[in-house]
Length: 110
Length: 112
Image (cartoon, rainbow over the protein chains, first blue to last red):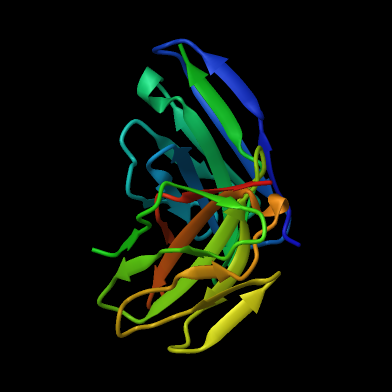
């Protein structure tokens, strides 16, 4: 099974702070995704990428940047964190339509 | 645009009873539908998938049939167990789309 590793698993930051969430996949999948999960909203796509250097905008991109540095590594950046970004963030990779999720990062912005 | 609708936020059932979780979708393209299950503090995992009209697909006692005529892909199980308590997401990938769009999820709570 595809391995997707997220770090950190938990993060607390202050309003206005800088946060970087990391994701690494070890199966050389082309596609990688960042989703946020909130009760009543399900999983919402923030950004995605189909290879190193590529970035595509998802459904809820405001306040987020992302960068795909290698085939394996995909980062989500919050440069001015706000309480509305408190959420559970999932990274995922995909090949031939099958999506594999990491274990998630719980981010709290106080 | 493409969308997925799950009408039930919470379903509570007694162990041994049947369940159906609703999923309908909207797209103008050829659909590929998925069901994911997420247990507490875990990542979502693929449960079922289908792109074939009117063909039942099954896994781990759960089953679903894609009906393009009604744009539906409801998840069913004939007898729920306590271990089925989890959050269930329906997802849509339209045509040869590059990402899946998820519904809001249905929490299934099975009680003794």
